[in-house]
Length: 82
Image (cartoon, rainbow, N blue to C red; front, side, top):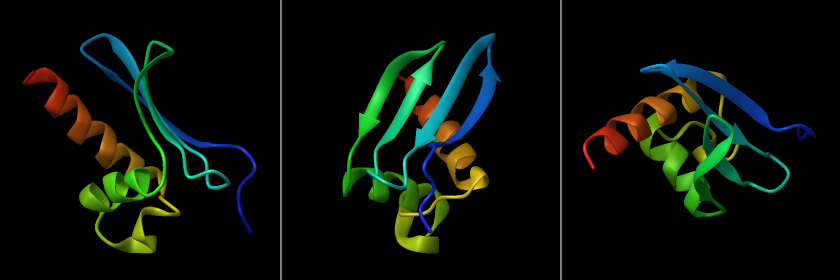
């Protein structure tokens, strides 16, 4: 059964609140910083983004909290190097 509410994980990095939200119903993946959208993906790009950091578990279509935390860590590393 698909979740009605988005799966959300939040982390505080360098004093900034960062969250990753994933909707199983739409496949939308959203990265937010202090509530503002930093990045947003839709299928198949959202699935690929998740699978690239979490492995092929569920092919990125049903990420766990740990999968989303891995995505957050990866994206924050990329944002710091830009």
